[in-house]
Amino acid sequence: MRHRFLTADVFTDRIFGGNQLAVLPDGRSLTTVQMQSTAREFNFSETVFVLPPESSRHTRRIRIFTPNAELPFAGHPTIGTAHVLAAIGEIALEGETTHIVLEEGVGPVEVSVRARDGRPVSARLRAPRPPEFGPPTPARTDLAAMLSLDEADVLDAPNGPQAVSCGLPFLFVPLRDRGAVGRAHLRLDVWERVLARSWSPHLYLFAFDPEHREHHLRARMFGPAVGVAEDPATGSAGTALAGYLGVRDTRRDGTLRWVVEQGFEMGRPSLLEVEAEKTSGAITETRVGGSSVLVSDGLIEIP
Image (cartoon, rainbow, N blue to C red; front, side, top):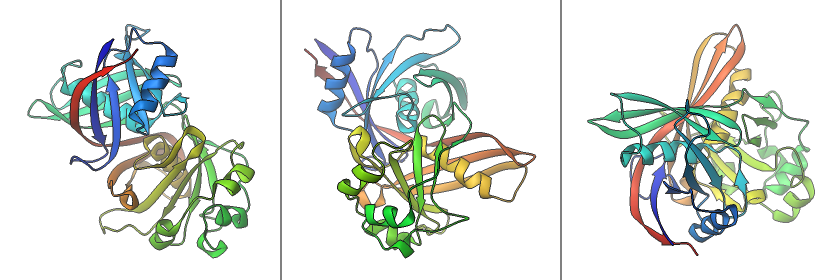
C-alpha cells in the first residue's frame, strides 16, 4: 500500500542543511514492524508516524523511530513534524504563533509554531520533563580514549562531564576547544566497554568555542545505541544541555539563552536555540527551537 511522506531539514533555514526528517502524516494503518522497516528504509536519524491523539485536548500522537529503535522523545522530529503538519494544512495556523500539543512516548509535548505570511518558519518545544541528573560518569581517561582524544582535551569540574535527561538521557562531554570537537572520532570498542549499558549511552560533546561570534557553543552527538553514528542536530539533547548549562550559570532568575552549532563537521550545519527558565536559582523548564524547511513530498510503497 502506498503512503504519503514528506521530508524536511530541521534546525536550518535552507535546504540540505540541518537534520533530515521523514514524516508520514497518516500512520494509522501501519504496524510497529512496518514503521520500523520504513524508518530503516529512509535511514535518517528519525522517521515520524502521525496518528490521531488519544486525548481530545491534544493535537496529534506521534511515534518516532531511528533506523534501529523507537524513541520515547526526540527534539528534531517534534520540531520538524509540527512544521510539516502546519505547512500541509493539517494544523491550522492562528496568527504569528500557534500552540499545539503532540503526544509522545514520554508524555504530552508542548510546541509553539511561528508563522510568517501564513506559512510556518520555525517551532519551539518545551521539554516534557525537568532536567534529571544521572549517576557519576566514566573517568576522563576512558572518555578521552573513547573519543580518540588526549585526556587534556576533556574538561574537568566545574565544567566536567555529566549525564542529564529531559526525556532522553545524554552524557555531556565538554571539550577544550572547537578543534577537539572536530578531531573526535568514536571508538566503538571502547564505547561498548565503557558506556553502552550505562544510564546515558548517547554522547554529546561540545566546546565553548563556536565558529561564529554570535553563537555560544559547538557540538556533536554520537548515538550508536540507536543506530545513529552521528546526528546533525539533536533537539532532545538541546533541552538537557540547557539543564547542564543552567545549573552552572550564576544568574538566579530569568530566561537563559544559548545558540548551539551542530552538524558542521558533517556538512549539514544546524543551529539550535536553547533556553532555560530559572526562578530563585531553580530551573523550572527548558526549551529548544529552530527553523525548518520542506524538501520533498512523495509516496512510499509499504508492504
